[in-house]
Image 1 (cartoon, rainbow, N blue to C red):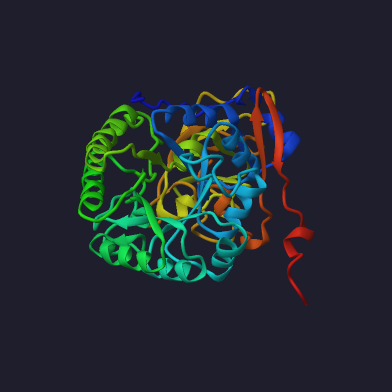
Image 2: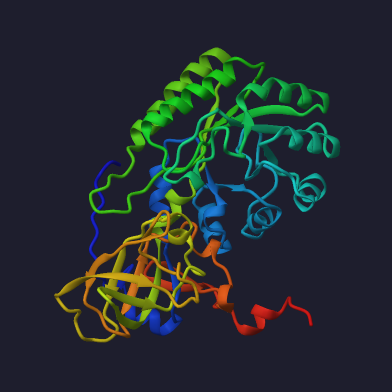
Length: 426
């Protein structure tokens, strides 16, 4: 798929349901997911042997269940993510020899809770990102099979904060330290059966070719007998008009060429895993909010909505761009006129602006002229949206719904005040 993204800044419905109906039934702010979109993006990756969903992108158990039912397995990065996957119906062990591990724990450390869980209760496969992880797992659970996450010495990402490779990144085992890790694994009778390499989000094909080469070098210059290679995630999606979808055929071709070379050297098949998060979820969801004030501040026009960075932190965190559309709040059609506006939220924080660039520079969007009571939709918020929400300003977590076959289903209730303070003690 390499077609261009096209976007309209006006909406009347979401997944076939009128915006006004969704807002009136479930309230705002509201995360709205579309099951068909998730299934389609999962189907796009059918050429890969294993699709392992990076749960950190969105961990709602209804979403995890949907992915499980459609063939995806899980990458977890914490004890609670493991437990979420189990709650969604995933198992600890594969159904049969040669089948993918249903859950893999990928991290650079074990905190106590994760190590206790994996060593004693839920023996999921571990993808080790540090030598200390190998040591700690080996002491507690010798004889396991493990995977090594490798830092190839370089990285790439749409923001420095999403770059996961190179000497300024905390992730992975430095490529020249792999032999020491193998010696340590052997000491504890841990069998290294796979390699994992992920250098950051927004991976383009030029950088991908370097990753493929780096992966092959590690695999061929160390005494492995691996059965699985994970090419990580970071698959980009288009956010702005005219941007292209990634060429998945070329993406897979680069990896398949590498896999063919490795299989000829190892003398047996090797499974290729991909680990998407944003690619599967981002486009499936939008954050529905309502315009609560229209202000003119000097030369600038503002639409202020009831969603803030407590709901969607990506713009303030690293200047992430999200398409924005407007829907009428009543039966009156939107004005044909448009204007440049700044979109802000309700929080007591100057940075609570959805139209900003990295570094905090405020920008404007060309949007239809709107009034208080109209709806503003922040698009492509399924990944790192609700999962990064907070209770800043004592704002409750937003409700979430999943639309499947034209029917909306509540998959997360709006947080109540009682739930907000239930763990606090005085």
